[in-house]
Image (tube, rainbow, N blue to C red; front, side):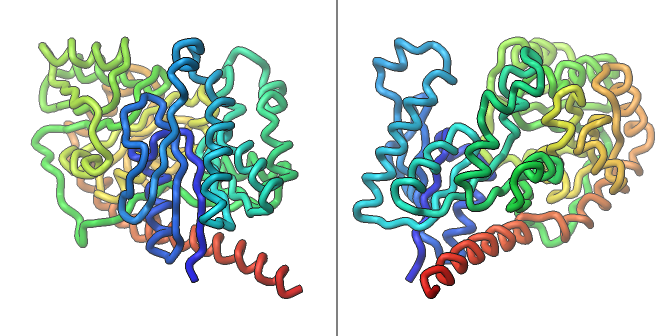
Length: 384
């Protein structure tokens, strides 16, 4: 009989590539998966089934949406509503594992474990103590504020996280940490050579100052020829509008937000994937960027940030160039690639070649193994 798995997710699910990949892999592996998701904007169906995964979405009541201006203050309401929904589901659909994604969902898993005796997997996509009030309070105060160690060390059965740096963070106070990286599923049977007549730099993702987007726009604008910048992501004032403004006179293009199904196709149309993130941000020093694995799966050269985990990876595997988050350094690297197009081919081929090691097929097997071991422990306990 198939085991039931409940995932708790503080976003609407559809645009979260890690969660969708995990849920669909579990479904293919024989598990029944339901996801309680938070529809923060009230724009998605309350119930739908996508590739065998059932999604149940919760909306914060309108009165609270009007009264509470900050998203973080709505988290306790989400936690209570999700917990109640989980208990309701359990009456007719007994789940043995609760898989929670990131800190806002962790208390829900803890409450369910105390109430129902289920197993809890904490899937940490980010280090939330690094994110919380970043730069405003001392580092030694951030972790107690989030009480991450308290929940993890006492109530979690296993932690899944995304990078070696994140794993080392949790290993300081909890021994059962497993690594499932944000790899992508390889689709092409052979590498497809990029067009190198023009250096097409692709960035697809979120926009914020630590991702050095404006520095890239300025660098491209200074070069002006044999180069094109392709940007895709949500509208963010001060970044996306600046790209649009520059597109009137310079070779940059803003595609807006694109569905995850289109990400690899757009990436493949480029010749260089941009992931120059600022090493001052501690998250980028320990976490590998999704953009890196998108570049690997389609076989494209990378431009990454010095001092970041992604930059170290790019340098170690020789799949691109590494620079600081500075306009002139970025410009110099881009000119190097324009003047030496054979480097683009060399880096791209090498990136594709390591895709046999770094791909979602391998990571999904690791995920299923974690589940098997967890449930095997339950079975042994029952026999005991």
